[in-house]
Amino acid sequence: MRSTGAVREFTDEAVADGTVYEILDDARFAPSGGNRQGWRAVVVRDPQVRLGLRDLYLPGWDEYLAMGRAGLVAWAPVTDREAEAEALRDAGAGKRGAFAERLHEVPVLIVLLADLRALAAPDRDLGRYTLTGGASIYPFAWNILLAARDRGLGGVMTTMLTRQEAQVRALLDIPDEYAVAAALALGHPVRRPTKLRRAAVENFTTLDRFDGPEFTA
Image (cartoon, rainbow, N blue to C red; front, top):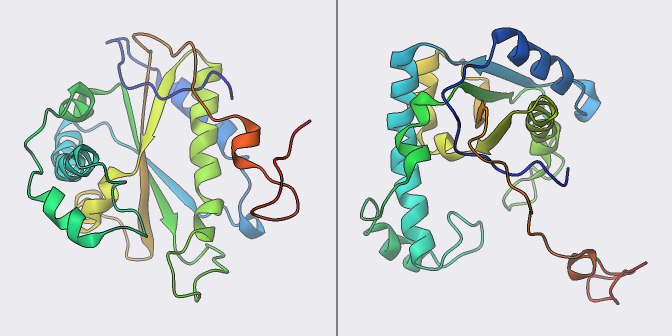
């Protein structure tokens, strides 16, 4: 857990199908609500489909970068929508970076789907952004990254394709009952993160109340 950082640069070395299968075979032991395992993984190998996914990825990435340049958290549920709209006028102006431009070339590309019929989402009716359904899907995605790390690989999860879900649905023949949850890129890392920067426990944990004293050992 302390060494599984986001890896976006990969060598040209191929990853065997058997290795990808083993990764998914380990990842399937992720927890999910009611053990319904509402995930579906699509391993994308067809070059034209990969290129199509890359093209669908770029508009969202451009928007993400534009909002970042404006000091905004992209698509935050609580945000200044006017400032966001102003920032998006600059979408496409910045440098995209190699990962986005070459997404179609990553050694392993997996699109993760969620069966909306299988997700227990007790916060569905609260009138705010819903979170709890993802608890039955994203542990599986994290397990994929952990299993890849265990085999000397690196990877990253990105949710940018959800911005173009209708087009992704058409490209991959996804039924209406499924939502696009993420895409995962895996491969042999050019370099592996050596030190991950994370906040200390005391920075995000309190005792008894939200505004309670810091929890510490």
